[in-house]
Image (cartoon, rainbow, N blue to C red; front, side, top):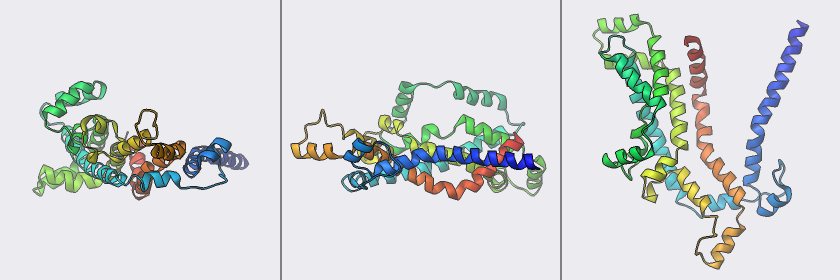
Length: 290
């Protein structure tokens, strides 16, 4: 019993230290976003800044008001993209979970190949252009409707559901669509919520496809807008007026980067607590069912 208590104390202390190591960089990031150039130069990274200023947030949220349009675009792409990804992923996974599906093995192999081999950037660009999706928000959603890895995870989860449940529904006249969306999906909600969180984070953080497929700045997502704002801090090659150059040069570049990181992270951090219970349950169920 005494050995067990000692182990619990050591284990608890190790977990506390590990948690602090994880939280520490975020505290530094938050403090840095409220620091001035002089403070950063004199104190560097610190937990307790002597002076708190809002120059970085004023530059991002007030002087660059078009950031809110980028926020709206990111919210739209993330919500609509995640919804469509889950619908298509669950539909394909449900079909491939049926052993009686014609050409099931062939389709599975085709999907599996896409996990290891990609067509490349140029073929994807030519395909998006040929489909008429260039400079459209659909170019950020359609090419990633199904992730093979997530599809196989959901398929394996569907295959673990007892067939007697579906057979009972079929005897009552239920169609395959009804079985999928009214029976299978509610049962698999923890696993689907887990995959949905991964899709959501991917869509929210994605900026490179937008920089390739989008031409109109009004359609840029938040991440790409912030990237351009931070790039504007480099004025070495810009023909701006002396007053503008002086104002930009006084901006704390590192603070702007830290504030931009916090702005892009905050929405996901706010959403996560609402789906945490499904996320944890999905991981536990997945570990049991293999």
